[in-house]
Image (cartoon, rainbow, N blue to C red):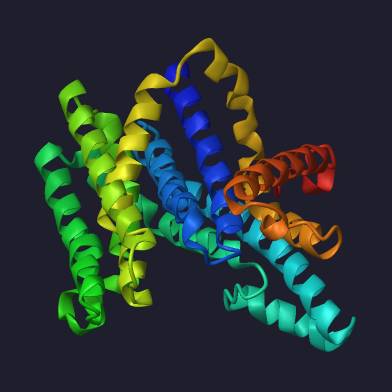
Length: 337
């Protein structure tokens, strides 16, 4: 992968990690005045996955089971160490330091219970994608454009369109057999994973980019109107504020395409180095948010929400980046953050 593409992916990682922090700041209060922040941040995890798909599935390197085993081992260490950290800390605060707290923490990590480390669901999900990557890589290495479009269309229908329509009309999408049987495989995560590869191999034309940006603006406007105007049921709102909503899909594709093709300026290369702190920011930001609220008494409700959410997002992001930089100086922690 050339330097230009690498820089673009680094910028994408920085944007995604910032949007994750923004999402968790905005979700602290249920106020319609800040729904725009929640809507904007929906692209965070899909961007991470598309970037992973681009890195793992687009290159000419053979992704065999030995390679996957190394990636899985590294991620398993990260999940185990930081999962135990979060669970031990929370269980000790609740029950005190005891064998019971240690046992509960171990069980939580093994069973993927993310009650005390909610952000870890993504790491477990990414672990699953790594496990099946050798099989997917064989498909992407041999697939043509029509093959990609066929699979992407199927996943889009099952993972996005059907659940969205069901959500609007308050119908349980699990009652539809094809969604019920394929949803355990998270069709929409596989779609994002493949889309990163597809857009790298078959980039959108200038006209297609313009269309996707206009469509993003249209769907974004409809989503904002739906969320901030009128009385809406929670199930109906969730259909618009989800990783597999049509808006999130179109918005993520537009953001990916623009960043991947345009972010190669000198300024972009200067800040691209921040990408190496993104995993640490992702892991640490909930602890910093809680510490600011419990210890310092600072949260998004301290002043006007429209201002407090982005300001505190920046503060948390910077604090986590600094903490990650410090941890990377410690040999024992360098490989797990």
